[in-house]
Length: 124
Image 1 (cartoon, one colour):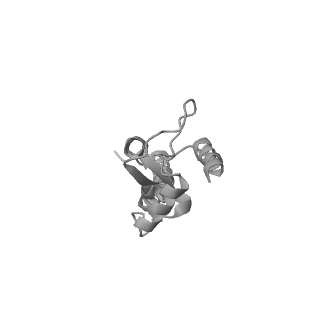
Image 2 (cartoon, rainbow, N blue to C red):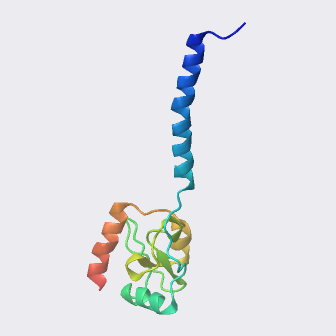
Image 3 (cartoon, rainbow, N blue to C red):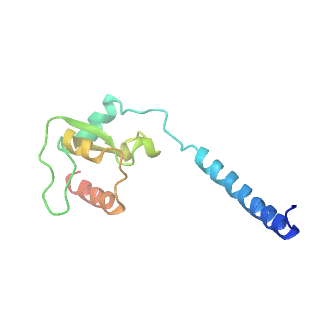
C-alpha cells in the first residue's frame, strides 16, 4: 500500500524545515572564538599588575574587606583567556592562588568588574 499524497507532502515539509535548522546548528557549533595568541602574562606584565594592585590580592567579597594575601600572587585574566579574553594589562588582575583557583575560567559579573575598577581608583 502506497503512502497518501498528504503524508508525503507533510514529510517533505518537515524535512525542508529541519535541514536549514540542522545546518545553522552545525555552523554555530563550529564557530571558533578569537583567542589572543599569547596565553600567559609576561614577567613584565605581571610585575606591572602586581604593582598596580600594591602587591596584594585584588579579590574583594561584597561583604568583607579586600583579601590580605601578599604572597603567592598570580596574574589572572579578568575575562578568561579560554573565553576570548586578551592577555593585556587591561584584562589582568593580581589574585592570590586561592582566589585564582576559585575563579577558574568563570566570567565575572559586570558588577564585579565595575567594583574592581572603582577599587583600583582608590589604590592607584
